[in-house]
Length: 315
Image (tube, rainbow, N blue to C red; front, side, top):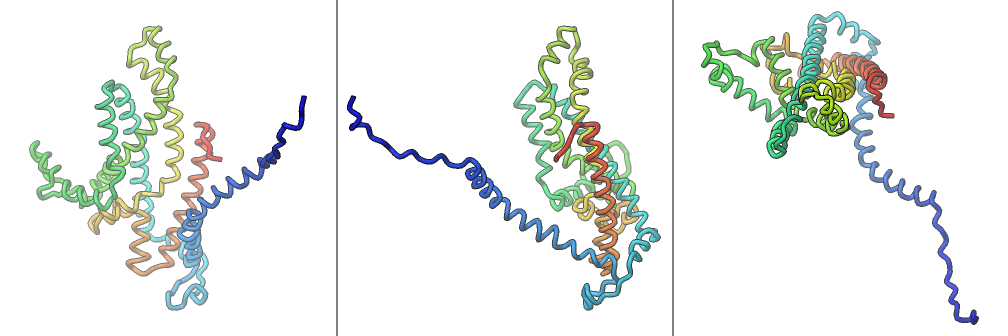
């Protein structure tokens, strides 16, 4: 056998796997960099302004020369009747949104799951999802026209049944109701998708076993579908506890007026009015910090509950 014809090629060195992994991770870190920079600029740098909550801040003196007052602003919050009322307003409106926002999409997902016509099901799903993409500036204008006591479509409709016109956005109690209902209308389509995704993950053998046992469609819903959705409902419910002090600034700001300040003013809008419009920057900063601390505690508790009862965890 003649070995002189054998061509010997240089063997390429095997690339170090760690080096490849490090290179790919570097690209991923580089892609994250713009988001990290923007988050740092708009979310972390403003934290320094919270020093105003402990000062009698005067813009012409700045942070360094404004007099320190310690916790005086927080004592004012707890002794100020308007501030206490604002906290109650926020709790009532936010709690209503959380409860209705859990029940409505849950029931709607169950009803939509029973629809067998895929084209109709897809059309309905798209229609209820659309309001999620509209801003409260647009929806606020639509609601102002629809709910107007003088010629609004809703008042014209209830007038057919002999009911007097209702000032939905000018009466405090009706304003809370309108805020909760309109928020659910805007967002329940998005939450329904979460439940539909959970429904798609149910093992079909459970329904087959129920059919073999003679269970009707209603009993399958009661004994298979609903128990399968309960863990997801627990997770969404516990996570929403962290938003119990978030009444929704965009919505309330675009809908309310001085007529409903007593029952419609929430923490965010109150901080805006006191801090920006009235120029009490230290009071507004202290109120915002108070809300953030309480919300952080609630978020920690809600994540603990979600992990314990829904086996949900991020890290």
